[in-house]
Length: 384
Image (cartoon, rainbow, N blue to C red; front, side, top):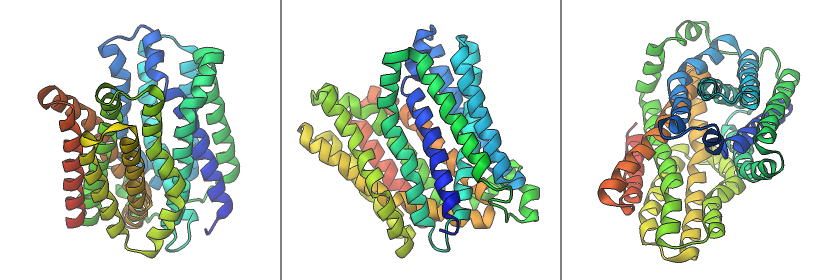
């Protein structure tokens, strides 16, 4: 690491923020239901959040390149604090929808600026290890968040959940203002700064050969993750008859393996071909998706869950390191923003496509589709 102190601060900021929203998001649908949200009103805030991330990620990422990392961190975390306070004090569904939209805009800026700073703090050819270590903060937070959220909900209700979110975001802002220097992440050329706020610039980045392949890969990965998260619990409960505890263990197994192996996988991506690791991980995960419908019993699906985590972690730091390499060419903020748009588009398309498949061809077709989408995305990445 060129700047270990900065990296530790980034790790803490990302962990605290991810933990806060891990706590809140686990109970957000329940919160909407308690406010009277039904049908479209229940799904609209979630849709607005996804759409705002898809639409604003390139623009917000470009703002990071143009106006600097410290300012972007301050703006995104300030928006997070305002959103959390809005959730805390408002019970109007219309206001909550607007807050969810603003949260998406803040999220669209937060990830690009974090990865920009991670790239700036990592040493030469050390992007993989830095990215792998940094992502531990996210996976650890989303693993702990729902559990902690349950405790807070039982003790203090939604007030406790959103108060914790506000305090964690405030902690992140305090750490950011203290530890991120004003010149952090500088180095974007003046020429890039002139064009990076335009949508044609984002389209030009997406059309670049290597970046285009990376976007296809992450879109396929987003589809696969969302299909698994949305339909695997149904299969485990309805077809295999697993208990709630067993279902939770299967769902947690992948995240646990990823969190444990992110740092070693990051080191691996610094020593071997990153493109090969992305392909190996993407193809392996896709093949494992095909095995889910034929799995029998708790032990087999638990092994599959762990295997999906093991294969996923091969491509995670490698793909992020490749993205940071693209950032050196196009501007890190803009490259990460376009990348996140593709990822969130996958998160949005996956469940919609999966719901249509389930209604037409049955539950097992969803997992076969996830496998074929993953293989197609890997093929397009290889051709990029």
